[in-house]
Image (tube, rainbow, N blue to C red; front, side, top):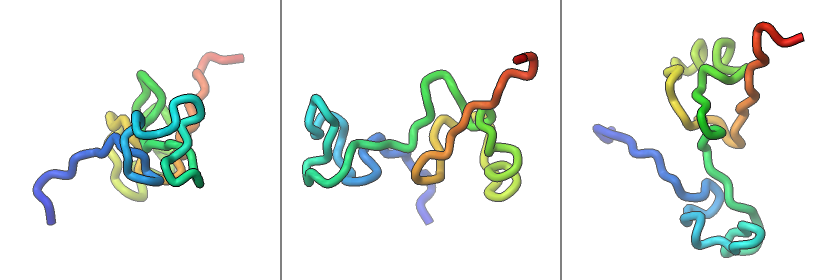
Length: 85
């Protein structure tokens, strides 16, 4: 087992970096899929997601401060504000 796992910023579909995709459409070099990562939206963490408490924290012991999702495709759904009407 590796001592440290480093998160790849490459595409989860083809493994290449974002700059290796078609600039306008982000199509993978193989032409069959589109660039995708497991990163969450900017300024969010796992604890900001609706799935965190009932799935990620309970089922897989995920830490609340993570900024990438272990699920593919990413299941991130932002929690609604408690004071929203």
